[in-house]
Amino acid sequence: MSLIAYFLLAIAIAGTLGSTVFLTLAVISAVRFKHLAPLQQNVPWAGGLPPLSVIKPVHGLEPRLCQNLESFFQQDYPAYEILFCARTGNNAALQLATEIAARYPERPVKILSCGEPPFPNAKVHSLSTMLLEARNDILVMADSDVFARPDYLRAVSRPLLDSAVGLVTCLYRGVPTGGFWSGLEALGMTVEMSSGVIIANMLEGMRFGLGPTMVMRKDSVEKIGGFEWMGDYCAEDFMMGELAAQRGYRVLLSNHVVDHMAGDYGFLESWKHQVRWMLSTRFSRPKGHLGTGITFAMPFGILGWIAGSLLHHPALGAALFLWAFFNRALQSLIVGGWVCQDKRAVRLCWLYPLRDLLGFFVWIASYSGDTVLWRGEHYRLSNGGKMVKISGS
Image 1 (tube, one colour):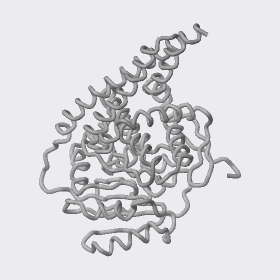
Image 2: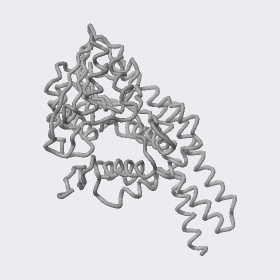
Image 3: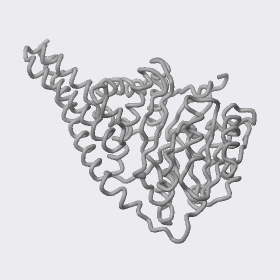
Image 4: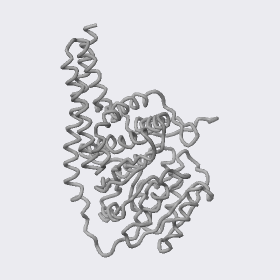
């Protein structure tokens, strides 16, 4: 028993060191991001503000959809159009968009339908349809579950005036739309996701996009081959950034943070949603995803507590557990509260250690298979993140 306990203790100490290194990187990258991001995006305007095309794929009614869509009509920007697209013209989200547009007759709006997609990723089919209809050079791709402050369009489009920048993307704050599990998932969006992004940005530069907001010029879209070729991929946002970087463009992480809704899920639905998300990451970035395992803190803190008790060193076990708890609470305060300006991440920093523990089990579950359920159909993921529909689903 003592040998097993010492083995558990060794794993706990190694994991604690790994999560401490991760926290250190998160703190350094947070300071760097807060200092450098505003400077990198201070591109001088040459003349008037260029007109924009906001393209928004929609798919049925979602929590807070009315507020989210209307926020894009209330932008402090002189000239822009908004395009909405769903599979069918009678989609409830398109009907809602039409009602909202009627309250803003000064804003050019196009309501489109694209039909059934010829490939697995329906969002890509919508983007391709709207690209053909967009009349402006700068394209702001924004998901339907994003709420934008009035300065959003000014902030995210400005870096595109530099021709070396091919794609701009944004961090996001998770906003719960339901009960406890929605709130916990939202906390993970703000803290866990943003931590990984700012660290990757510091260590290797941005080589991926984040789905809630991606901004490109038509020339950079053309240079990556358009949108349709990404129709077989689950994580089209990752692929857009990867291809833009490969084509020699800079992918820029904006200092503007958007609000991203976390669905009104119970535990089971929240679990399935997060596992699907991590499965996509596992196949899109296999090496980085594997390394994620040593970034969690609470599993190793609990393991250290158990090992310390078995070895009759309760103080050591308690110290490992308390450091893990403090580690994650501090991460929530710095990344969630300071970088993402999320008041919930400050107020609930004591709850983030639970999200960290749950995230570890979601990470384990992401290695349990290669199939995902997406919009009622089953797909098998392959290397690179491609999806293949399972026949009969």
